[in-house]
Length: 355
Image 1 (tube, rainbow, N blue to C red):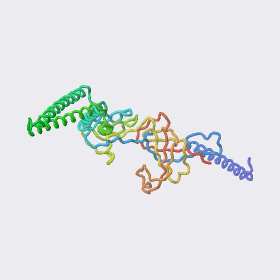
Image 2: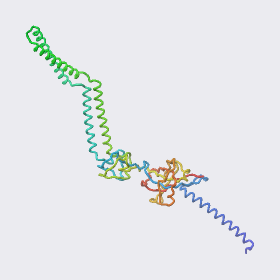
Image 3: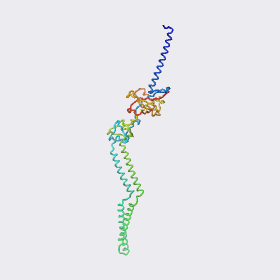
Image 4: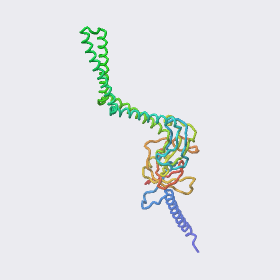
């Protein structure tokens, strides 16, 4: 039988054993919790525990959402793409009503052809047939002038002999003057046709041709703007207008016809609270979760951290978010092969190493 005096000592020893056992179990619990919270094993770094910075995020294409609008106001003649379509760079997505622009291009083509013909004519000069025609006219005028001169000389001698009157003499002199003028005109015209083009004539014709070509290029550029083309390979995320609807000039007022992006590569834009900005850096591993994918983690890494704090991009209905706190916008490039809907709200967890 045990002595009553020894009983307290046994109770004390048992209590000590219970305390030690409880302390060991609590230590094991925190160690397991840290590992579970980190989402990855601690490895050999016994003095370094993993921690995370959490924040809300939004899935977007790596190209960002790009709005495709028209530089011209008008009515949509055709809308050739739909939501979810994969499109190639340069592919026509929509066409504006453009009959008037096409007519202007056709008129400009005609003006260019006319200016080119005039320029070639100045460079090449008259054709051989034209030269022969003007030479024959000059010879004819020369013959008429020779006959008129012969008549004048004959009448002058007869006038001096008193055989013809002053009136006949004056008439012969006038005929000679007319014949001389006609010959001079025919001679100058032939020389102009037969001679090389003057530099100023060539320059004038060239300037007119350049002006016609510039007008054609301008009309071509305007006509090309009636075709809305994909700026890169990607996917149509949203179609804002349909065939027959009118659109405004997107450079003046935002009126996109499509929103597209390259969803082959995704990223997440995270709002990091201002209290955690010192713990975020490029290259850190990140995983995101979403209610639509319970139990799944999608991994990526930090690629860019903003250099300036700003206002929140994402808000929920939680009352505490009504306080306008600042955030640091952080971009996460998702691992290749990640498939998530663009615009999906996610919860992001940035892994940070802390001593």
